[in-house]
Image 1 (cartoon, rainbow, N blue to C red):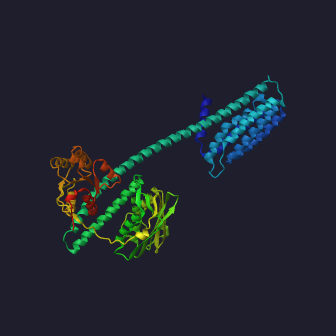
Image 2 (tube, rainbow, N blue to C red):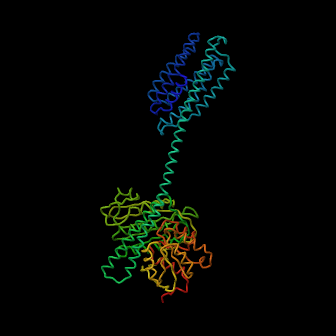
Image 3 (spheres, rainbow, N blue to C red):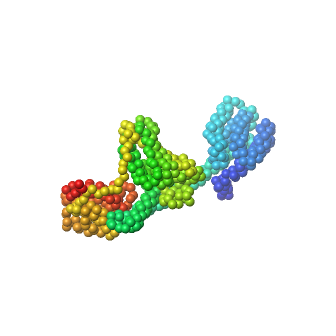
Length: 607
């Protein structure tokens, strides 16, 4: 029992050793092997084997040196010295005394010790040192064992003892005990280390799984929160934007119109901030999807330049577009995300450039016959960026040179969103800037070619006059229902539809909408809010479709929702709705939907 407990204590201490303490372990190994040679020295001296006695004396001195070197943390050197001595001693002892004394077993006893040394050196030495490979040493031990077996068969031993003598029996028992003891100790030490590592790995895996589960729950909670907050924030914003649009259509003093326009501008700015926060959160959690589709390169650039013209019309800033004519006419990628990145970067350029130029350069870098890099460079003559601020430019919620730019609104999220989007599309974004002189933002993304004909943007570009949207039709005979649980949203929707001569029926819940459809089957179009208590918009739509009548099957139902999370339009269509109008409602977008879904005979176009 005492021996067993002692062994367990030794193995426990080996397993618990810190890398800095391995030198004491190898000093102990050296002393242990030296002790074996002391016992052999005494045995050979007592039996008159002078040659073997002197060999063991040399080995004793040799292992004293090993102990000294081990204490100085020369682990690799000590291992090589021990292995070399064991190999040489077993060969010499086998040659001199023969195989019956089992000296060749010493070679095999080094194998567990070799693997233990491999583990020790992996934990103790720096990665810059040459890797210790245990297999060559183990193969050498096995080969030497069989060589010594061959020596036993071929040669007669140099020294002969009576096989029946107590000394021979002692040597056989002692050498076999050394072989078994070293093999067991080394094997048990290795097993103990392996079991300890397995326990650590299992504990770490369990912690990782718990952390991953917590992270998934956190992401799910955040996604739900974002969807709810999107709706809760956008709903009052819808009311503010809608009411200011209605006020701007009314007769009022010049001061009142300026105040109302300021409210409208501030509302749009707040919506942009909300959108940035939502986009960043979705990208950070990996829920922002890239939707690839065919698009015309020139169309993306035209739309962008027209939009930017509006932003600089009050400034002495000139917009330029330098587009390589050899860019393929039609590409396959997410044009919506490309527009989002360009609008963000060019928006910043126009925002921080008070006079001078903002230039968009677009070029194509072929990769093969089907793919290439679409590279954009946006150069401005604005304020520029300090060199020390360049590294934090793409960090979330950080704005550089705040004192100089404190009058310019923003969340500090725009460029971090751009970076995440570019990287999600397999591209790269970077910036070059000289403080006080301007900046140039570059980014590229890989795109697939769908039509290799040149886009020839320069030949087709035309100056487009930017005008406010003008309503060019009315539909006073159209029967329209608006369903929303918020009274103010119903007023906003009614006010916007009034511009088209439409007087809608207003309903504040889904169940009343369904009951009204059962009684009056003469509606041309229904605008249905998504998130409502008791019965939401999708459930109400399902109840209408389940009536299984020709009228209810064909009745156009358009979702109204402040939930701007991407993919909601698909959810609406899967729920039986025909289309989707986001809140706040844009008059131009609503006009498109009215023209698309109202019966042609109820539309009166302006002459």
